[in-house]
Length: 108
Length: 114
Image 1 (tube, rainbow over the protein chains, first blue to last red):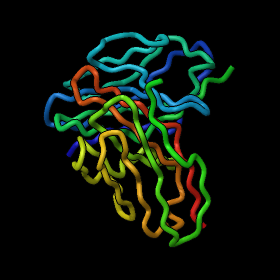
Image 2: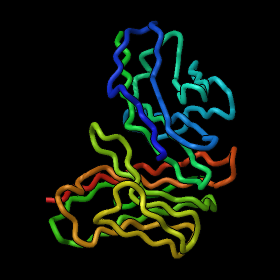
Image 3: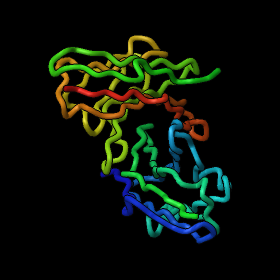
């Protein structure tokens, strides 16, 4: 079964601390993986995707096929990073599946 | 401006009174989808569509209907709303081409069923 799991509902860190939001997936083929973000009072939007191998707003995510993970990392959290983060998987059929989401709270 | 437009943005209704939430996109996207967002449960897919006249159930389709008669529109229909359908609803669309299949989301529709 296709599944995306984000084990933490809430992650609270202090400004300047490293951040890692966990994402594990279950998929039999080669997945396309994404991180979407929802800032307060804004629409959900793409943060980054694994095929681009890019760093956006200081965040990176590496696809680890062995561990079936796509964790989102940032070395130094900023207050403006506070938001809801969703990991998502796109199957070969085109269907997009989201994890349960993790709220990141960055304290001053 | 390329966007996904949902209406209404806010609605309070009563149990059993049929309602439709419209969704329209102007980007010629093949894929459209409806999600509901509830505290602690994240985003759950209700229905999705790969193209005109092609719709499929997501994870929580009970109590909802959709149609895709035109490429740009994907309305969500609640034939007999119940209080457990009180939620924040998002419509989203995308192309289906790998590398260009990023979802564009609407602003959300907050529905309260009394």
